[in-house]
Length: 109
Image 1 (cartoon, rainbow, N blue to C red):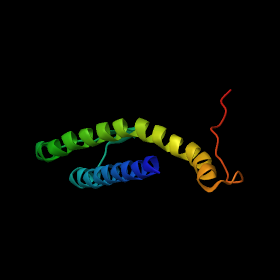
Image 2 (spheres, helix red, strand yellow; image 1 turned 180 degrees about the vertical axis):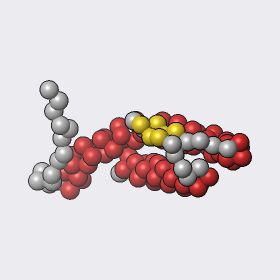
Image 3 (tube, rainbow, N blue to C red; image 1 turned 60 degrees about the horizontal axis):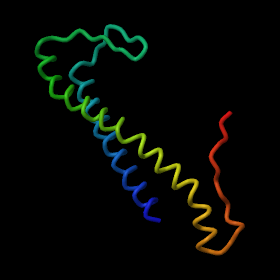
Image 4 (cartoon, one colour; image 1 turned 180 degrees about the horizontal axis):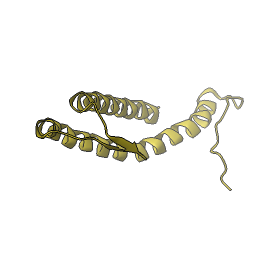
């Protein structure tokens, strides 16, 4: 039970970080709405010096948020798998019912 509560709390933290990222990204799009090109995830935009100055704080914050998101994902995925695959056996034991469904990891070949 404690693992599932921790999972939900960590997931909520992740959602809040992604939400903050989206809000800041929207502000960036308002400062620099026009793009010259976009190719394979790389966007090229012509900026004035004033726009560059306005964007600098966002660049630092967005980089920090992305690093945070990337660091949160591996342990969150591991915890989610443990909760998903552990809930069936825990419920069977708790209720004394061997009919409670269990999830199993997909076999890899």
